Structure formats: C-alpha cells, structure tokens
Image (tube, rainbow, N blue to C red):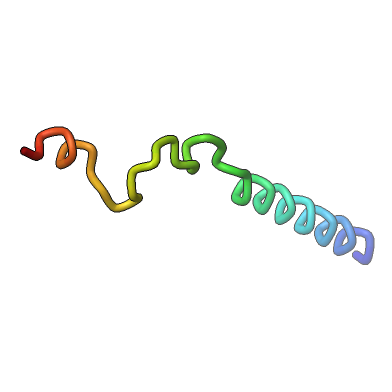
Length: 50
C-alpha cells in the first residue's frame, strides 16, 4: 500500500510538471510586435483611413 501511494505521488508530480511545461512555453515571434504601430491600432483602419 505504501509503495502504491509513493508511485501515485510520483506520477502526480510528473504529470503536473509536464502540464506546467506545456502551459508556460514561450509563444515565440507571434507575441512580439513586428512593426512600430501602436498595439491598439487596427491595420484596416490605418490602411483605409483618408
């Protein structure tokens, strides 16, 4: 019984670590701004304005 609980605890820690590693992966170049436009501005508004 004690071995079973130990294995269950180890499995829980391993699964938790795996889920945290998946959840906190960096998003890469998608998250970074590629232009000097303000973050709130819309491309369509700028393109078709005036």
